[in-house]
Every structure is written in C-alpha cells, then in structure tokens.
Image 1 (cartoon, helix red, strand yellow):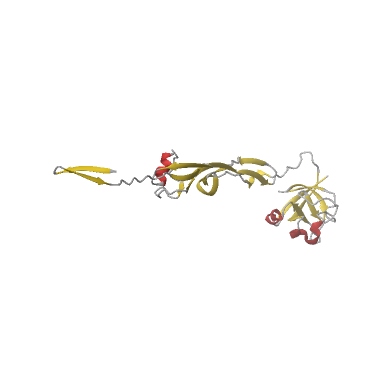
Image 2 (tube, one colour):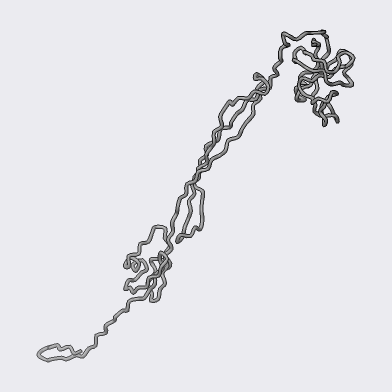
Length: 266
C-alpha cells in the first residue's frame, strides 16, 4: 500500500503495511437440563455466552466454571439446576384407653366417661434436589395435636342383695366374720386349685364354715354381704366363725373382721 503526500510542491510516496487482526469465535459446549449444546461465540465471559444463547440461570443454580470466567476455545460449561421442594405430610396419633374404677357404681357396670379422640402430627420437609436427584432433606416444621384418651368408668361397688321376702329363716347366728380370696395370699399352695370343700369354684357368695355349726350346702344370708352358700371349710374356722370369699385379695383385706348376723335359710 502506498501513501502519497505533497509537501512544499514535492510529491512524497510512502509505502506502508496495515496489519488486520481477525479473532476466530471460540467453540464451547454447554451441558444443561440433561442435554449438550455446542456453539460458537464471540463473547468474553461464561455469563455473556449463556445469555447469548438464551440459557437462564436460576438464583440457586450452580455454573461451572463461574459466570465471570473468560471464554476459551473448547471450554466445557456445566449448569446444575438446584431446587428446594416442600413435602407436607400428616399422620394420625392413636388415642389410649384409660380405666377408672368408680366405687359409686355397681360392680360390673361400665360407662364411657370420655370418648377418645385421635391426635394429629403435621410435618413439613424441605428436600434439596440437584438436576432432579435428591441430595438432602430437612424437617423444617412440625405441629402436633395431642390425642385425648378414651376413659371408661368401671364400677367396683358391691351390691348387697336383700334377703328374699319369701325366704324362710331357720335360725339366726351371731358370728365372727373374716374374709379370704382364692388367690395365693389367702390360700397359699391351695390357690392353684381354687376349689372349695364341696368342689365349687371359690368366688363371691361362697362361705367357709364349721360344718358342726353350719352344715355344708346350707343357704345363708350374711348381714352386709348378701346371699351365700356354706361350701367350704378352713383350719381356723371353728365354732361360730364364718369366712367370706371375695373376688380379689384387696377386697378381703379391706373387709377385715366383723361381728355380724348370719341367717340360716331353709
């Protein structure tokens, strides 16, 4: 290339060379959302190149190399999508059942004092995903509604049956009364049989007597106890003594010793 310049009427011809620098676009590849994208770009940074090809980067997404890194030919860019997903779960909590013993109710009677109500447990869990693969979870919220127990009242009061108006009384005895049960605390080694002298099952309504005073098989009405059957004996039951059977050892202990009237029935 020649440059012609006229100075003071003289023509000056200068030869010069112009060096043109042409930069080739860089070839890069981008892996995002499960696919590879290959492209050429003139952009200077990773962020600019991604913007050029309309790839959006979420606030929590991870870009490698960083968006501020310079573009180089053959650069491999990877974008990892980071998401937090929330899961709500609800579980029922079963209620318990409580028994309350009530001495004001007849023995064997039951009533529901309070209906049971299930509780509830609500859980909120945040799960961290990278490219749809869960890498961690954290329980972020929990609320609990406490269950209410079901309460059943069970009567323990002994109901003394009145002596039948048609019952004929043969004799009235003043006797010393004690109490026992068929359990080991009262009967020791004999408790495993739980049978009376007459072979009957020991239970409420059975009385141990001295057969010389009250023959076995005699029907009785015991003051404060109710109807009974003389069906058992005992080594300590001699003379005008009577031993009354109760269903539990605790009831027998509470009864203690009493002087009572015993009606011998026909």
